[in-house]
Image (cartoon, rainbow, N blue to C red; front, side):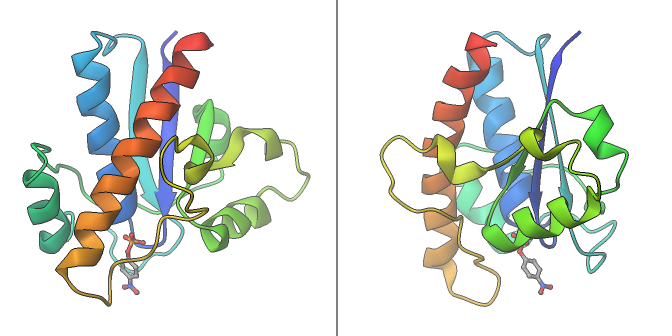
Length: 156
Ligand code: 4NP
């Protein structure tokens, strides 16, 4: 059975699709595409069905990452369907745990920045209302977190 990762942000058009596509890039490079599967979702219903934000797609392209996907909302069934759920910020983390009323899946939910090796950020900042540099920063930060995450998942 492949190990299944779910990346979660608010809209599922900026941060979590970036994490998903960066992680898939690293997984393919490592030759582990049969063993690790990635998806992403948003805690909100704001952008269901939308492709990734074009500003995010531009920033990703500069690092050789092609952005794919269409936004969906996080659902309770995701707790069973995924092995590890990565929240981009603390609000996402709390919103996910609020859906897990009994606390059964608490240990499956982690902050993405827990896996950073060279950045000290605790959260992936929401770039939506800022300039292009915010999107570039998100890609850099997620590259770091995804590298660390891949090393941890390889140990499982
Ligand atoms: P994301 O960014 O959570 O990284 O996809 C956002 C996208 C949309 C909104 C906020 C953040 N919004 O308020 O519509």
